[in-house]
Structure formats: C-alpha cells, structure tokens
Image (tube, rainbow, N blue to C red):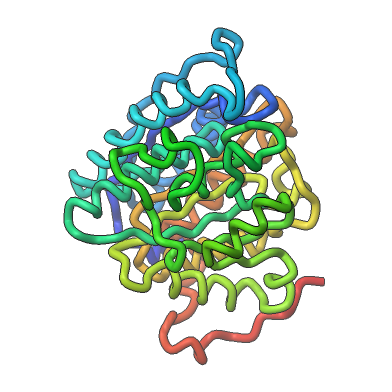
Length: 328
C-alpha cells in the first residue's frame, strides 16, 4: 500500500557529516553511512520526493589531531561547521530541502548557521525544534567533559566560546522564544540554569507524560513558528528511549517512545512549516543490526509526510486536537 504524503513534494538534498570530534565515544562518524545503508534514498523517493545524495563534508579524524584544552577539537569542529553552513545555505537558496545526517550533534552549529543565514538575507528568522535527551546548552566553562556535542544549542543562542558563537559572522542564529527542547532528561546543573535563564521552551519527559505528545508538539510548532519563516528540526537519536534506539553514545533511559516520535514528526509535517531537518548521534558500533539507523529513516519519512491515511489533525484551532492518554 502506498503511503499518503501530507508533505508537498520536495527536492531533497542529503548531506553527510561524519563528525566524530564532539563526542566522547568513537563510531558516530559512521552514522551517515548507516542511514544510507538503511535505505533512506529509496524510502524518500517512494513518498514522491526527489532525492540527491551530495556526499559527505570532509571531517578530520580525532586520532590525528590534538584535542587541546577546554573545548576539545575546537578548531577542527569550527572548520567543519564553516564548510557545512554554506552548503546548507545554498540548498535552501536553490529552493530545495536539506537533510543533514551525522555524526555528533556539534554539526548542528553548521547546519543551523546555514539555515539561519539563508533566512537572514531575506530579513527573516527560523524557529527550532530540538529533540534530544540532553539540553546541549553547556559552555566551555560549564562542561564537565569539554565535549562540544554538549554545547551546540547554547552557541546557536549566543552563549559560549566566541569561535562557536560567531560562526557565519553573526550571533544568535535562533531566538530563545522560537526554540523548543523536547525529550530532555539529562541536564547538568549549570546547563539547567542557562536553559531557564535564556527562556527557551523545554519539555522534559515529565511534561510529555503529563500533557501527552500531541499537546506538546502542538505548542512546540506554535512557539517555533511564531514570527519565523520556517522551522528547522534537529533530531538526536538519543532523544528516543534506548529500547528503540540503542545505537547512541550517550543513552538515557525513559525517553520518547516509538509512537510518540512518529506522532511528533507527523504533526510537524502537517504544519507545513518545516524547512530543513537533521539527524545526529547514530553510532553503528553501539547499535544492534542497524536498528537505530532504520528507525531514523522511518522517522525522516514521517517528517516528510508518510502516513497510512490522511493528515492527522488540523493545527488550528487547538481545541480540535483529540485527547491523548498519558504514557503508561
């Protein structure tokens, strides 16, 4: 049976970022290859979209570099993000839809800089939905490990090391009021203070349990789209519960389950607001039979409109949403 696509046909341009510099465990550089092997291209084409694989961004190997002091592999990560950002910007300038696959989540600084640069030229802003077990809002001063994959969101909001904050030649790639964290359940003390102080919207798992994912994603789309020209979705595989996504370097129990994740991304697709997508932290070395990469492909398809039936719900008015039972 052919899936019904509620997401208008797009020319999808796929970029791999085999980044293994920002994390503390090796293997995540093989994430783009794992996603390719899981059949993403054919699945996307079956939805009626065009799909072109643009290859991988060049990333140096960590064993050939000195991590340095403080934020580890800072220069190498900055260089990689500087290569990535204009590639993403160009895809959007050409009217296409970028999907970026990693690689550790530090690559998001390059991806979102490119997206923000595209809209900035037009006097517009981009909203952000960040799906993750971690807030990724440490800075060089607060990070217990120095691993930059725990710092990208703070840098995108304008906090942290100047080399990270000023990527693309401007600061504040996204505004706190248009930034939404979904699925967080492992947050450091100093990081928690920055989350609260910046005012980003945050839905830890307790709120998802209490409200239900339908209500959470309704609010998230509203916040991220308020006054913006589009929404970027950044999906860290560890946002999922490890039962469903075991192939990640920093698993945290009690995460988003299979049905919640598909609901989240299908509703974002129905909103018509999503302009770009990235998937991060797929680590095949830690995976079981490519389970995590397979799941990420399925979730990408949900984000691109795959459905059994028609559009889930009309996002307006919010009173039209069906009741969703709390997680058991």
